[in-house]
Length: 111
Image: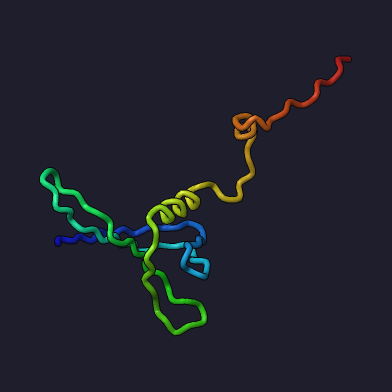
């Protein structure tokens, strides 16, 4: 069975959390590896994902230098999407109009 491994560096701008990992991970670059196997097909080559792994720093308070954790690619994609959203930014008037939360100021009586 033929396998392949693809490697990607994922950079988080904000701290994040993944299931299966107890502690919050700091912002920064992380190496993500995906292992796939070639399926025996008669048509075009097709691959099936075997594992997606992320390399993390050691657990705080331990002597480990780092760890490799098996993760769900959908969970990683969701964490990346959350990281890409604007954080702690108050909505502008344009945002309020777009979401329907904008109210016009009361009309002042004419003098």
